[in-house]
Image (cartoon, rainbow, N blue to C red; front, side, top):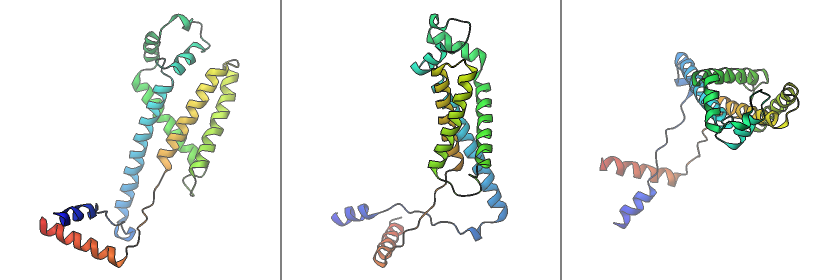
Length: 201
């Protein structure tokens, strides 16, 4: 019984070895790149949609204060959060918002391409600096457009900086599989565990 418990504790999940690039055909490599890019694009659109829905929603305090400070003729202070949400949905339905987020992802991808994120290895820190720089420029532009209204300008700049950073992270992040060399004792133990597992099956 003790041996069986020790064997269960020593069992490890088998990890597939990294693929040899020479064994992958050219067409398969192209298809993998296309599906990988499409998968990243869908995730980026979803994250951008959720970030905008949270940061601009009047149901939350920051979104409500942002609505109150907009340069519009309507007195937003007399309207509660619920009617403000309905007013936003009438002005911009969900499908239109998703379309805007898709265009935003394409714009961020073009920005990353122009700044060299697809041609050479970059760091997350540089992506953060790039998003902060774009957010600062947007803050200056929006503060001039909105007659120096501080909070809405800061709010929109922060939202844009956060969205650009998250979208860029989804589109560009890569991981490497580092294979740890096994000692002879570990290899013998793994072979023994695999043999016992095959016999049990």
